[in-house]
Amino acid sequence: MAEYDYLIVGAGLFGAVFAQQAYEHGKKCLVIDRRHTIAGNIACTKIDNIFVHEYGAHIFHTDNKQVWNYINRFACFNNFVNSPLAYAKGKLYNLPFNMHTFYQLWGTKTPQEAKALIKQQCEEYSKIIPTNLKEQALKIGGRDIYTLFIKEYTEKQWVRKATDLPAFIIKRIPFRFVYNNNYFNDRYQGIPVEGYSYLVEKLLEGTEVKVNTDYFDNRVYFDKLADKIVFTGCIDQFFNYEFGKLEYRSLRFKHVSLDIEDYQGNAVVNYNDANVPYTRIIEHKHFVFGNQPSTIITKEYPEIFTSKSEPYYPVNDNKNTILYKKYREKADLQKNVIFGGRLGTYTYIDMDDIIENALKVTKKELIL
Ligand code: UDP
Image (tube, rainbow, N blue to C red):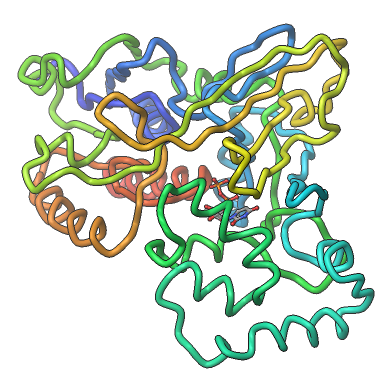
């Protein structure tokens, strides 16, 4: 008999929801994480009374009522609505692409005017089935929007050509003909007022957690500890890169404390031009309507992924999708290992999907 029912590798959102559900169903879990903190990439640190999103902006949004109800058991969410700005060629514009943006760009005042202009610009792409991000963006938004807001930003952020990226990435951003700057279409949205780390702490209540503990430092030992493993790290590393290395998009975050009340007047400002080295600046206090006397901003720099950098985003292009399929097939044969999270399933998914997936997996695993 192993000491634990489940060894959960990774104290991020997937691992924490799994642990919570397992605990609720009387299972004994051990959660380990190689970092010195819990909460994975949604970790927040309180500095000068401001919750700093250590690994970039995380705005919770979902259309799934079950997920919303579930997560509200563990945190109190505020009514933050993400309305980022885009700084391009010396001017500020509203995002996502909506009537405000079109007015700022072309002076169009009505949806009819904006639609007519965009239709003209999209003409040559209207009949094609987009095979990459560039074609998809041109088909939806036309030449001006692609050139000013998408091409340079995307190529800077992903460190690859827009023609080498999958079309679905750009479909994440709403495109609408009403005056509405809400970046998301989802019904529920907000930020946990006590920070994401506290939310994860709540999810992990009752479960044994060991940080500074790397599964790969002693796999043989850890594998013996539990009947099953829930693995949320990189799937290619789990299989010792047997079929080759998957590619990820990495980032570098530069946090700066400023002795001023307000730096940019908004939580998120994107910098769309190629000659600005960072992709966005976030000002953390605005996520929770803070009125502290000072502020903290974070500049997000794209970084090429190496063995020394952190994997933040999977690169779901053709080459990596084929490679991932091989790992997936192998993963499906592992009867005692459950793969979850962005890295474990090599998918570009948001927090709500992670929770939904974890609830589905635990339902199958623990309840049925
Ligand atoms: N994007 C863009 N310009 C922007 C914002 C986003 O071209 O001002 C593109 C970019 O390719 C990005 C994708 O849209 O990867 C999805 O944006 P989102 O804000 O959802 O990215 P995330 O917050 O997940 O990094």
